[in-house]
Image 1: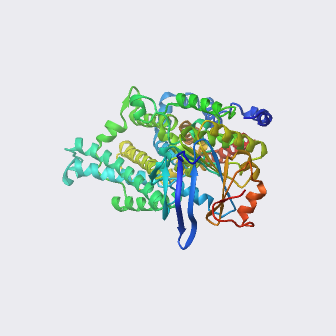
Image 2: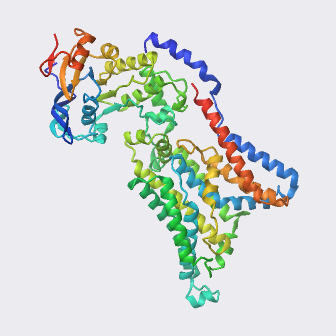
Image 3: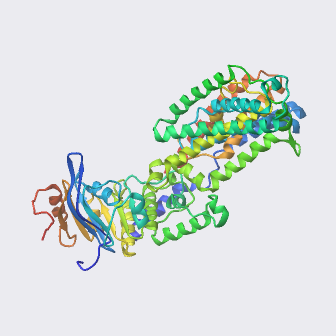
Length: 258
Length: 348
């Protein structure tokens, strides 16, 4: 893995909220085609790290590199580079249909003068959506219906489909299964595998250890604002992960549990 | 998807069948309007069901229509605009004053001579429309930049505009407005239809197309549905909201210009409940006060209901104040049934 260039990497990132140190010297990397799980107890700094990576929050120390080049990200810039985020609280507009949600903020417009006047190309967006959903194997009976009429799993499916539609480089998923039932979570986990197989890496944040061990290729453990362990889901157990998260076993920063 | 998730998918499908193709929310209120028209036609015969009378109803509804169209966009964003009635009278009074000022010298207009009315009338109409547009932009600016709730913001500008309108007009009607404006614009007919009705209908059509087929409309729904989601996907929510409140102001300004054209004057004591009437029309038409849902066609039907009722009652010799009672009742019934229908639709 060492000879490959990470798509996205942080070097020595530190972040303070006033006097409180939220992140300490974080070195974090994502390589093409992998699912990296980011785990940790509440307040460990997972969301803060994600917000720094996506440019939502500024950081005080360290550097972020995108495809080997140092970048200074804003949320708009992150999106432009092909980094998309799926939020825990479903950043969809419930009164709009699946097509409108997938294209929200990036609508196709009619060619020519009509497009300049803001007329939407609904036909093209609709056929693109059908293609996208079938590629990801998300089943939605009627994509012209409001999201309020869909199940939680289908809504999350649309949210994931949207991020994948626009993410050419990295998808970040913040607790995508937290609000879902067992079967619906299964659908989202399958989606994550589909996306990984298409070559786009995923940063997967979750509290749910079985979910993490099902999809992750690598696991990064955060505790009190530091990355405290790298785990391998093939050799490490859920108990190892929980121990590292809670600090019941102490280890030097960044150690790999053998 | 692996086979393990398939049963859940297929199992979820039958529950959704009954609401496969639901009727639009304005459909039921259209039936109410139709029943009203049929009822009055049977009762009054050709005194009601007559081209001229329908023309009167359309003219009567045309001003409220403009306010209600603006309010439709505002309410779909989950906002509210209480200031439309005050923007209307302020626009009419500013427009009237400008019109008088540029139509002749003070001595001339006092003798009802308007040598420069060809400059005065267009300038006055433009001033009315611009006044509305400016106040609307101020509303949007306060809501987005100072982060005050739309209800409070527009309640404040309602008071400010009404006060300014009274100060400017010294509490009475604007005098010496050129008479030709009512003759040439207010009473003008094109192909047997009043110009004001044509303007109002054109606004309706443009608004319906904008809401349904353009990015502007799409963003209006998205912001009302989930403003955070809209922000996260990069929509400039503040800028869009300013545009929406500016549109509401612009249309109130046009409605103010209608006052000058219809009545040849403007008075701050008129239109005092038009803001609430506009909101009623929008809500009767099926637009949700919680945002994210609504239609122009619903609003059009909602604006025709009070006008039709008043007309039918007056022809029948019944006290037109009953119209207020009936419209209030229809408003409550419409919202009640609409809420029930939506709950049923969203039940999984």
